[in-house]
Length: 113
Length: 449
Image 1: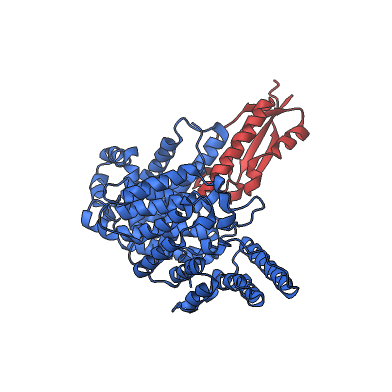
Image 2 (image 1 turned 30 degrees about the vertical axis):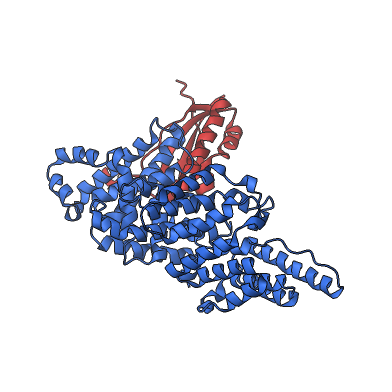
């Protein structure tokens, strides 16, 4: 088994309260499935959309938001899967896809020294 | 705790109402942003980490913290909330004060205050209802628009304009001033009545938008919880809503078609709501005032209390409509009264009563006006005339259910016509009261004209 990171981008911030509640339910169900099937390694943490970016040798600091809303990383999760194909299949079920967001699947490199 | 149905929507109303008290009504937009942010945060955190132990408190704390940040950043709120302004000068006291101002026990008062504020005399009635639905019930503008079958752009404008009026009024309505409370109470009742009507008789494709009815009942219950709000007329309004809502489960048949009152399975009526309606009606029978809501609840009761629709006491119902017409003269009430007369005295009398309605021009876009004429023509076996009336009604129908109903009536006219030609006996049509049932109390449709 290998580890993969799911990186979430582009939360829908303008949905109605009713729709948001439905979305929360979808997420909960999705995580429950991941957990039940033994794929969930760490649910991860959400990231606020504010913050700062530091760039270059001159260490220029700029305030967030640093990208288009749809490109802002909103959180991540660690899962275990057979291979990239299986991880990608799992990611297809992510509720963020229902509301205009995207999910990135990245293999976590093993730290072999 | 797992949040119940519509938890986010209801929390939205609660949070906006409480935070507006804190920020001042002129900052309503800002408050809405802060609350929306709290929900986005909930979505991110709860989605990944699960629901917190006390979701309500979590949301309030999140919104409150965002509110504090905003207060510290811009400090304009003090201008409109002087009490708070003074405290803003000492950072330490601020957090404690906000904590105190946002006690969970306060939220009912906050909702009530916001409800009264939305019924500002400078805001048009249909905009008051939209505003209540948006601010207190947590419907997005798009959702309000679809409930009212309005274009989202137009609804956005209507709600924005209403919010502006509210903001310009500088302060929220003060529910603690007994005289002002009593003075605005009728407008609040009226708005809740219209909200219920929009759900029950509105043009929404779902034909029966039960969600709006439930919201109206929730808010009228809140009003009854206030000692000054619990007037007999408020009890009568709540009774009226319960008696009608009790019939909701039976109003739509298994195929999704509207059912005439006569065809409804009375066993499917909600006996709990029915009982509650009766209890409320008893509570309304105090004091000397006989409001329009008493009369309408009385009509609803007449329909509810008989086991079979043919036992309906049309004498009593005509009497109630006579009284209602005096209280609230409107073409719709007059049409309902005419229909009741037709039920009591026969089709000829019904037609005469409809033709005698003075302002019947106002009814010309209302599908159930030609439908009523068609129904009485049908009953007196003038099938060709009846069919043309139903055809006219069909052109005005507002949703697929109404269209299907009217198409069925047109088909019945055809059948009647053929039977008449071949000298066959015609099966008398049982009380086709769907149209009558759809008529009573509907005025919102007309106020939109």
